[in-house]
Amino acid sequence: MIYTLPRKATKKASAKKTSAKKAPAKKSSTKKASAKKSSSGRKYGPAAGKQVETEMREMKKGTLKSGRSGKKVTSRKQAIAIGLSEARKKGAKVPEKKS
Image 1 (cartoon, rainbow, N blue to C red):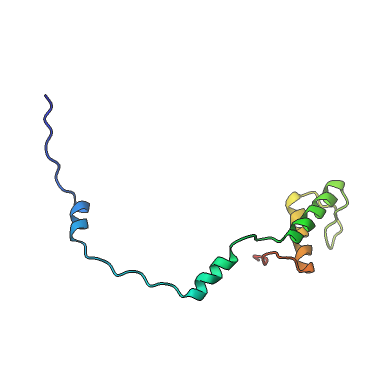
Image 2: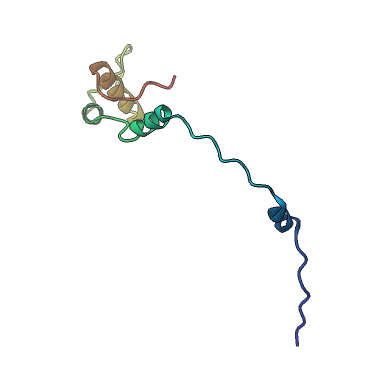
């Protein structure tokens, strides 16, 4: 036969019983909440995607050149950056540059 000893109450359990009720948090203003909701959705517009697609095709053909130096672009990331930059200039929905 196995005998088990009764467990002692831990501090966490006793703290739960004695803790007072906390006041509910303040609700944020409706303007801020609605602004957050409206920002959800697509980050990039379809025109921006089309521009990036065009630049990727040019890069794969070997005809995409970088701005000042005119060197051939071989990096995929650089081609995307060029596409987004041109889409920004044309007024497509693209987030602002981080730096």
